[in-house]
Length: 362
Ligand SMILES: NC(=O)c1ccc[n+]([C@@H]2O[C@H](COP(=O)([O-])OP(=O)(O)OC[C@H]3O[C@@H](n4cnc5c(N)ncnc54)[C@H](OP(=O)(O)O)[C@@H]3O)[C@@H](O)[C@H]2O)c1
Image (cartoon, rainbow, N blue to C red; front, side):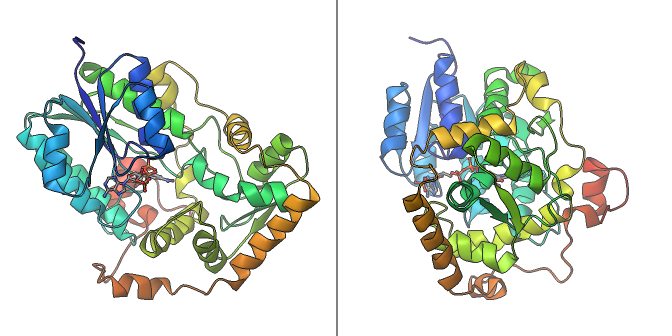
């Protein structure tokens, strides 16, 4: 029997959760993986030796059962509505179970009066996480994931276009972390709380890159020229709804549009890149080229033949034909809590004090 502590991983089939489980298993930790349903991802987790727990992680009764017998946990709210509900359920169950250590996935943007309800909920979840006297906490707060760019990889392969609403091609920059590197920081904190309790980390990629440089990187990997195209927010919203792989709800899309505005404002470039991945894990973060190459290798169909070109044009046409989404209405229809004077991260004094000591850069 293992003498290592039992670790619960929530959102275990998600972008970071999946790697957290696999890396913990590589290190020989007993892991319970909280999944919504069984599919090829849960097969992978089971093959790695994780115990699967199938349930609803927004339900306290399921969370209590999932947390029973655990000593540590990864708290990862899905990119979906009701994140605060998830976090309240998790924190209540973790408190009852007297978990010794929790690692939370938050956001670089987290600010009290942020226009994104999801982000304000992360702000509150961070406060809830600190309330339990028996549980130590490590906070991992990444910015815009490199994985988000991969939604544009199909079109880059098919039509030579990297289309995203990131502003002018040579301006807003980001040092985007890979899912694996975020997971490695989480795993380091889960496996060595004595070193990481009470700390906050912001995993980033190796260096800041502009949208033009991201397109060039995709081009180098794909073996043909890829040009960046700055698209409107409207277009991004249509694309997120037209392309099933993204699979975001209308509510999530309404928030991602706000994050794209933060991107254009340069918020992800502030104080980036960080040394956190290397300092915490002893390994350099992946380069953008490695991340793109890995994504291309995972989709062998991504070759530029005339058939692919035709399907690229069809996908583009589908985006154009997708009806516009009124983001304001989406939020009103869901009775989202609204603020009379929301403030983007850089406009918030509390955020600047913690993230960036100088005045707004836009
Ligand atoms: N993306 C970014 O650029 C970015 C940047 C900074 C911070 N973040 C933070 O990252 C977090 C999301 O992390 P992630 O991307 O690793 O997660 P994710 O890919 O959104 O994964 C969420 C997982 O939770 C599962 N799930 C959803 N509802 C469930 C339910 N009711 N019961 C059980 N499981 C359920 C989903 O299942 P299915 O797969 O079956 O749907 C999915 O596997 C968010 O809190 C966000 O604030 C993201």
